[in-house]
Amino acid sequence: IPPLTGERRQQLVKVVKKYTEDCKIAIRNVRRDFNEKLKAKEKKHEISEDDGRKGLEKLQKITDGCIKEAEKLSETKEKDILNV
Image 1 (cartoon, rainbow, N blue to C red):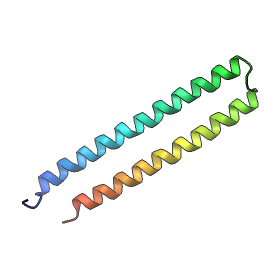
Image 2 (tube, rainbow, N blue to C red):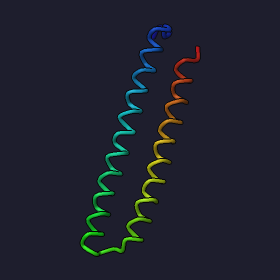
Image 3 (tube, rainbow, N blue to C red):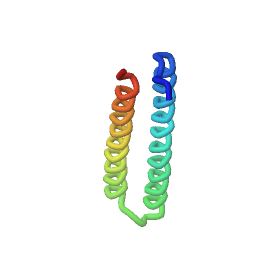
């Protein structure tokens, strides 16, 4: 296998960024789905407003952590690809 050229490395970095963005979108979609479920439970009075609000806050913290982890992995991979 021949060594990677600089141009090919840049293309691979673009691919990594695209996958990272797809990952972020998937994480946000899961968050949206759970937000809707929590709001539906609140509407049906299965949970209280306070519990619903706490659930939304906790869900947001988890989402932020997952997105940060995805970005960290992406940066690590980009550095790995770009190192000669």
